Image (cartoon, rainbow over all chains, first blue to last red; front, top):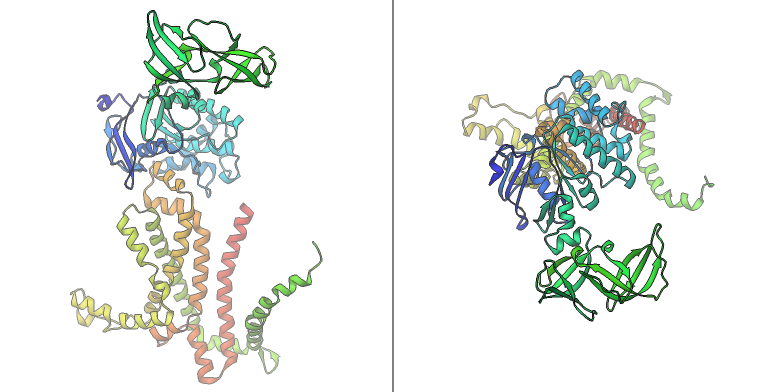
Length: 358
Length: 276
């Protein structure tokens, strides 16, 4: 395995973690390059925070290896790993000032009071917190506390920063701002970062690579666009937002594939790749469009239906289209009457197709 | 504010009555008795109290202060281990054992300590049997040391119970954040955990201080000789001489010592309120 090389910041090799008799991580493998920003994405209970805590050393591994720059740390206590971590609750020490919190790691490293203060000032300037050194952390706003927590982790100039849902306690506007700030700090300072989140957009906008986790296993690793456009499993597809499903029947025809949906009179011919037999298509709302019910479309399924609901969220209309047995949400620029017969067009190349048995 | 309600007053009246009859009246009475002689305001009883018992006053302060400090030390150590240790058997053992003295009354504890700490008691016999001490080196601990040992043994579980509860309720991530930055566990205990539970520690210690100040059985049974604690002196003045006046004066001095502890606690509270 390539993880033995010191040119890899973190190499996780067949990592297993148990809570009592319950196994929560079932052999996770992951390599992270120096300077890379990784987002671990998954729903609650998928093991993403456990993975992060095991890297930090707060959770004991039941098997496998974690190598930091080539050194196996799986049995090293957290205080000796030299990894900085930012906690979901920020975990600031309420009895200390901003200076006390941010400078604590420096004090542990034997820096003098003056040096600590000077270094903390630099960190606070970087985080737009100048002048707050002597303020108690309990007197800060949520956004400021979040930055102090980030500053405390960054003050020791770590090679590796772990972030446990760092933005989940912030309101939407501040979150978007801090997202950009963390990302730009990371590219400027060059540390390796692993961030746990359940927010897909956060993962997509911040990370170089996304790790999607499901039930204690890695479901897919890849660049955001790659994972978004080419999910490898129904779980990843629906987690990345393709949560509409449609059952299809795929057969090999004389001149390509014949794809037939329930409610269609004739199969659609297609020259793409798809599993044979009963197939479930996963797709996002935005790939569907409205056209005339009898229009033929090359490489796209057209389901006959009618409009049952119309709303105007701004910029375009949003319609609910009822087909034979389902309802789909579609957007369109045109104004259409309720009950108007339409064809719901689904381009086959935009659908994620998986065998139904899966 | 609405006008005072009669019903509200009636609701608290039984409680007020109890405080009045069982606490305020005796307190007022003993204060009055301490500061009067022959119906006139006088400090005679205090002069007598200081003349006869100034050594015991100092002895009482010494014993209670040292006991409180040692109680703080051991409670912090035990609560710290319970909170921060990663050795499951140590935590389980300590958790099972440390509460026991809570359920033993002072008088029983004192009796146990008499047999344990005496010159030919269990402790010295064990030390002699194991060869740590020569029989001639064995000394009795039944003096100020015995009182302090009994007080600390009895009060540590109480303060530890409060402290361990408070430590368990702080955000665990604040401990992990310290470890993450490289802090050793003793440093985490002293610099990160203890300041967050200082309030609880202080309450526990003030309560212990006042409790130890008012215990009669331990100084009487563990160290019968002079100097002794004020509670023994008060009992002696009343039982041997029927001298309530001097006993009351000694009681007022005990109140003053308790009040000093309460004042430290209140001052700390006010400081926190102002900061918050």
